[in-house]
Image: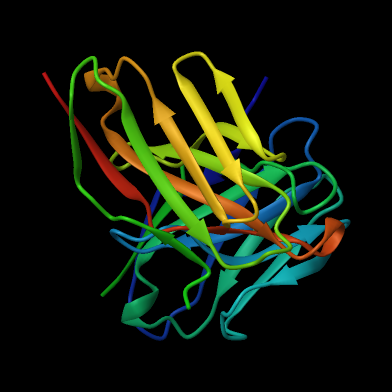
Length: 113
Length: 113
């Protein structure tokens, strides 16, 4: 039973560039949430996708956008990258309503130079 | 007031002792509560979920919830060196499909031999 998979594992970008991160949810899960985790901090909620629509959003600027595909996989896009966007980006999947336990992928480590 | 408060630690506990981790939250409407374990450089792993007041036991782990005091705790009995990690508490904000999960910044636990 495949768990949550994320790609790429690591990514290095420069300021002003754009990046796309990808996530495939755990088998049987239909809800995907994205989190940003800075060093020494807990995961910060970015947004959640269900039925190909953004259902909930955290306090992140519009530079952060996403998409969910019919097979439940998801992408996180970040435009105009800033140094402060350097972090571990975590994808988590769950079923149905937003209050179910989240199961995390291994994350994508994004470094902005 | 922060949505969730955790002592960042580090909390040092001798091997074989009971480790006690605590978390307070601000949203009185929260219904679902979770404890995650995160090893350094890894993604969070779900340990326990609790939805009702009282205690819930799973092996060496016991989660305790007191909604009136807005307090949730995690007890780890017979602590092992492999329990050394950061423990994140998390809870839901909002209702059902409109809810999202908020994480604390985590408590670093160190089990000394």
